[in-house]
Amino acid sequence: MIGISMKQLRYFDALAQHGHFGRAAAACAISQPALSLQIKELEDTLGAPLVERGMRQIRLTGLGEEFALRVRDILRAVDELDDLARSSHTPLAGRLRIGVIPTVAPYLLPRVIQRVGERFPGLDLRPREAVTQRLVEDLVEGRLDTAIVALPVSEPALNEYPLFDEEFVLVRPLEDADKPVPKPEVLREMRLLLLEEGHCFRAQALSFCNLASSVPRDLMEGSSLTTLVQMVGAGIGVTLIPQMAVPIETRSAAVAVARLAAPRPSRTIGMVWRKTNPLAGQFEHIADIVRAAGQGRDRPPMAALQRFPRQIDADAGPARVDPPAS
Image 1 (tube, rainbow, N blue to C red):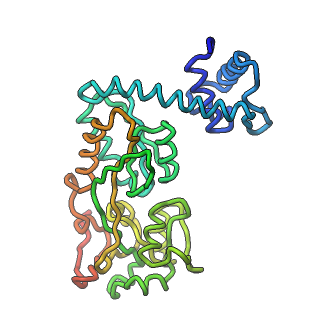
Image 2: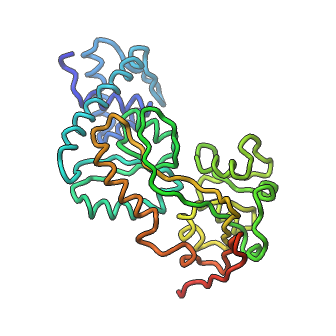
């Protein structure tokens, strides 16, 4: 239809996603009055309202809901045309919207950003941290280009590219450092601290403890691994964290870390992107950088980074780990 601009479609898509003029305007980096004006002009062009305007939020009309679905398809197709043009350029340049799950972002993302910048100086990396379900939705809808997640995600529209495996380790109060490492059947009888609903790491930890179908009454939840480790340091319980989180999360908490008995719990970290994305070949170069960072080629091994007096391996027995010189 003549008179509808791509700018108006993107503004309307943001409004449909956020359900609020202020938040949509912030996401589009424009003022709220400017966004409202563009939406009003779009409605005038169509000759029908797209949104019901309330005091605190907006609601899409029936036409607005149908329109939003088609707008999303149009924007995704336009973005893929842009990606098609970028795929012919070497090295990769321009905007790259990359999602990262919260149990990876603080520990891996800084190194990835640095190394991607060195390898692809023309690339404008736009990271976004969110739980797996949200990242998958944003990928499918074209709001992200790729994401670093725990595999599998089992979404037919996405290609999964495994990068590396990492173990989970047990974090417990410092006074428990010399105690035997509990087996899974013992661990599930202890007060277990886990991430809140929505985090894939929560489900993986529950599965290891054979608690996937019945969550114990003593289970306590936190919003981040930092919160969980600090709660352990306060003597509230025990928790599992991924190995990459150990150096950062344990440096200011009175905790001990133990490797669990084999077969040890672990996860596979990988990258995912839409199968239709023309940049798929380029993403593999980014994946190589993420793999190198995740496998620790640019950092010392876990044991050398401990800031607590003891680390125990369930298979090898107690081993003294002296704290690093300050």
